[in-house]
Length: 262
Image 1 (cartoon, one colour):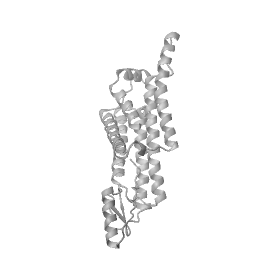
Image 2 (image 1 turned 30 degrees about the vertical axis):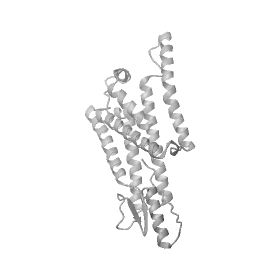
Image 3 (image 1 turned 60 degrees about the vertical axis):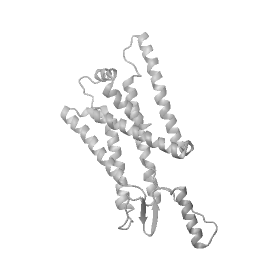
């Protein structure tokens, strides 16, 4: 949902002549700072997120996608905003025609900014559960830190590009006209620094052989796999335990993955 909103935002600013005209009427002489790399990032993120969601539904079934009430409420709210606002634009445009009023309260430019704020809100709430999970577990075992390092690098470079564009245009007000890019960059930086602090300082109780890139992650004397084993592996291990101990039946409980951050 977030990257769908962000793709619509960047795509409209990059391709739509109507949005470009509305932007120039509101900000005379201002340049649109949405560039091709911003659009490519949004489309790429939307595509990869869609593939990941499809895999979850395909392998685990639609029932595996269970939303808790706060998240479900946020989804319904965002869908409602995205669906109702265009209707208000159409109604307001007809009202303006009859009233000979060229200034509309509801317009497509405001709608795009609203979509960008939805993306910022979604990015905010998607980071928080992982911070809480790390705090409750007092550990980051089973969770790759490389994703965070790359995300931090992207956030820094994204905001740096925006600042350099403003310097080139001699207009730092452009930041307020593209708050989505600026806000998303800072959100990534702030939360990634929190994750780095948790991983390397606050909960750094791993031994020297620990590696967050391996399939099996060792903490102390315990081995915690990133993914639960396949059913065939469970059956094979149960049979081995039964033969070794002389038992006819053996039980095995697959460990659950401890990563919820995407």
